[in-house]
Amino acid sequence: MQPSVHFLLIPRKQAYYTQHPLHALSTDPAFLTTVRTRTTRLMDLAADELRRQYGDSSVSDKPYNSALEVLMSSTPDPPSPSQRAALLPPGRDWHKEIVAGVHTHPSMNHLHIHVFSRDMYSPWVKHKKHYLSFNTSFLVRLHEFPLENGDPRFKPGDWPAWDMTCWRCGRNFKNKFKALKEHLEEEFQEWKKE
Image (cartoon, rainbow, N blue to C red; front, side):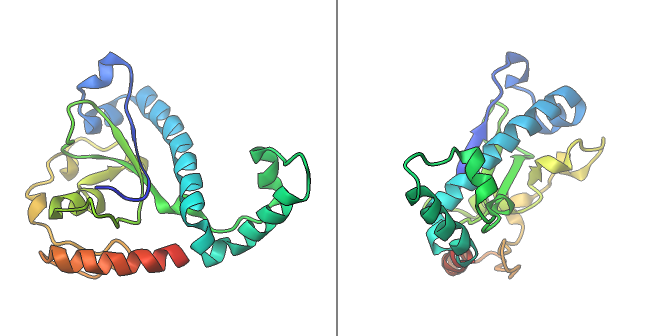
């Protein structure tokens, strides 16, 4: 899966290397707090990257971009990023386009947390599993932790057989991956313009 922005947060403490993410994030409050703090920073970085890539195409980001252009060209010493934030209109909320979570059955042995943009359009999405793994309950979002003992997401069942539903409009494509990919290209073009 390769949306426009995709980061992995990988803990460096050996104690977490081989732990299952659902278990570690549900039973270790200190670890969950640390992950949330670091993920927040990554989400900020991801939102900034989306603005850099698509801000010029976004109707709701036009006031921000216009004000930024005036601000940056009106002084020989441009304000720092923290100062800029106070001087500019908010523009599009790129943070709402960012998702953070873990897979119920991770693809790597090393514990990792995904931080990615929701756009879901890429030539690298080549299989139904790629799409399902980031757009169903197979991905447990970070804000859902800690999970209760016995939560069904610990055993997701036959997830590759699940229907594919568009992340944006909710249309069900059942098992028609090619049709979904064509649709996602259209949705991507519209999403950029919002």
